[in-house]
Length: 371
Ligand SMILES: [Zn+2]
Image (cartoon, rainbow, N blue to C red; front, side):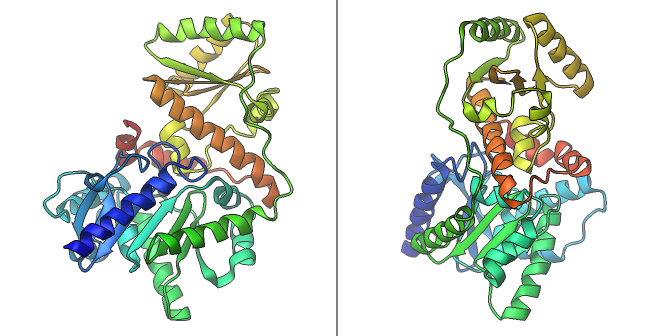
């Protein structure tokens, strides 16, 4: 019992460390876990790592989770995810919280601690044209590279297969897993080990950077832009939405004209879609032109734009609350950084239309978006 308590305490420390660092985790992204004997504690869905305590983890039976590997599920992805979700919930031990969608993935690794994050520097490489080649060039067999696949059950099954393959070749488990267009998994015996491995990965990837990110120091808007933004705020607040505006050199480099905004016109990772949706609006001209662009965006996509790039002015993010608008803005700014840094690895590789469609229709991700 004492060992479990200490293990959970260490898990909380690890979770706070990465959860409070925007270069690793933004909003409710990322998840962590701890294992002891036949139990695993995995972050509950929707709880941010930053402020989590022992109660934010779901205690589950590893035996019952292992059964998901052999169970037969529907071929229809939506039905299948619902069936898997039910089995995940049945594996809980006296717990009612909803386990992370990546629970089975955590259970695959036999290390006591598993930390899954979405680091900007790592994703710059994993969302680039040279994701696989560069990963292997820098880290060789130290890492396991998993090509992009829909998150949830399919990602779990693919990782399981590749992991078994790796074990049969190298006779050990990898401590590091790279998930293309998604993020990083680091496994270890304690906090020290996890942070040493993680620092080494980030250092190695960033040491080869030729292109670096423009400054994100806030820039004040000129009087004309200020007028435009406050007119837009008035319009959007009438729609019961909250709005956040930001301007800095990084943002400026993408809102120069429609062509520069194309560079961030598609999502890189599932999390981008969860927090910013899959399409973003670039608008220019006077307030009436901008409102017209918003209206036609809404008609075309069926939703209000979360992200609006205003020509030579800055970035606006809209949400149900100030907090949710702020989260979308942070995630989108991270997309801009990833886009910028991907030039170090041959340029960006966005998610395809089909991959986006899967996330858009996935219930588990829609649940997460609520927080
Ligand atoms: Zn993830």
